[in-house]
Image 1 (cartoon, rainbow, N blue to C red):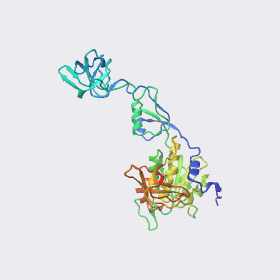
Image 2 (cartoon, rainbow, N blue to C red):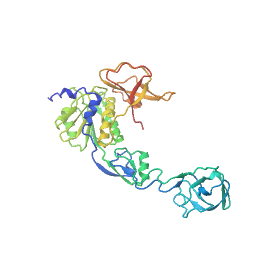
Image 3 (spheres, one colour):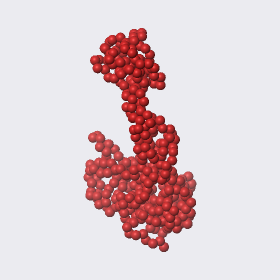
Image 4 (tube, one colour):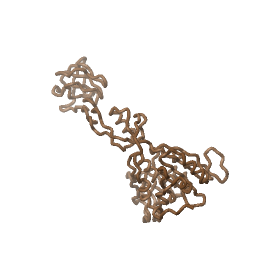
Length: 408
């Protein structure tokens, strides 16, 4: 018989539970990554510019480079050459001379004005300009994007396609990134069978480990799917014991029934609980702790919607923290599309769809059926709508908070 956990581990608020789950979570390690392999990784050190970008004054337009002091509308200039990207004009521009120049090409020495080609009329080796009395210079100055020594990106940011471009522009072929958290996913229950097999009438297809493994990868972790186990404490312990991971995520067996065997199984591996239950709907049985060897464990409910809600609220910030980034869960405001009754004794995270009204405001529409077993509802949702403990009844148009779900 396993002793009952202290009462302080039960019925925690979402914020209390998240704080305990994140306790001591920090970057696991650092490793180099080629730039082409760094998308989605977390920077472990700042990216510092080693040279200016652009490294020279460059033309912002296709046109003609001249000296501003020579410019007079419709005065003739002598064409002496051209400057193209990667092939600069090699000499200074003299009095009355014009150099054909293309976008991004280096500005020749002594030139300080680019007249766009639409404002030029060429006649053989001469050209005249009519750009008004005070033409735009159309020049991108050296270092206009960044200067040597500038901090381009700070440690802790996730490398997305835009940041990838900035790193490449700085000339870096390799970056230092945080090691990805390695996460084992274990589904439990006699009722589960793998997709593609033939279930008995009293069985269902196991789906939770597939979605969670995909989310773990999307959130910067490395997922390891363990073979699903039935309601057998020894088999569960045997599946977890050899897993060389930082975190174990279990699905199912998280409540207090006769077949909820995950915690008893892991107690044989030295499980020490930090969270036993959470005042949360769906997801009250969610729990967390550590094994004797230091591996973290997050126990999620067996119902798919419950597991996915709790993954968003607890697993994602934990993975982010283990990668050395900011684990804050950021909610955004929205307006209710329908009225909602007063909240109950547990914080309720409702699956919802988002839209935009004619005034540009975000509108949240909770699905009418919030049963925690409905995978189809979660597949259509693009946000979780938060209802605080004891929240008053809300009317259509009231301001509420939502957590947008990543889609695609």
